[in-house]
Length: 261
Ligand code: URA
Image 1: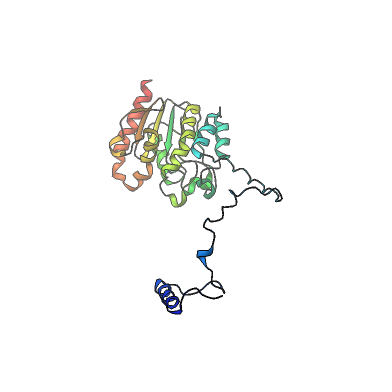
Image 2: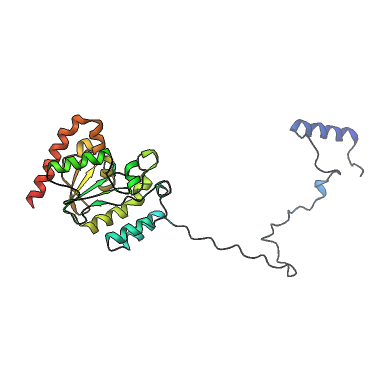
């Protein structure tokens, strides 16, 4: 094909392209872009339908996106007994923690007891046994309860904010707490305790929407329609035994409340 440009101009244009960074030519024959039609071809979707071509099948409809928090609300509302709640939790597939856990840790103690204790989340021992507060912290909890004449075999019901162990016992994430809260609310409503005891910051954050256990502990407050007493978590007391004095004062508060009514 003959060039319409004189050799000097053609060379100058080539040098200019090299300066711009062009390192290779793509086509064997040069393409005169000035001779191309001005309008670009329309994308296939907009091109006029060709009656000779078979119509493209429509893409399959997308599965509606599920909001796990909404699903939790729906599943929790749907149950009318503690057994049904346990089953609903066992069948709930939207919390990633479930995949890393060995067991669902639902509750222990006496359903319908006057006192319901809410801990944080299962640790290794609880995950293995499928029961809350069975490790060292749980044994301390049992001794604390016994000191005021309570026990999980007779007078206390125990659960956690999360029913599955977080990996490496890390703190529960806000999204996990938010997802599991509807189940916890339903748990409390079905167990019908007279008072709630919140062990540590995570349960205070979940139930009261506030952290700061050092300030909150020992002060009765109201949540989920019930009197609520925040206390130091037994695992914290194992690390800070000097705080057991305050925990003892809080246990006496609990005892006094139960004697009042
Ligand atoms: N800590 C908790 O908060 N819950 C348990 O079940 C065990 C340890």
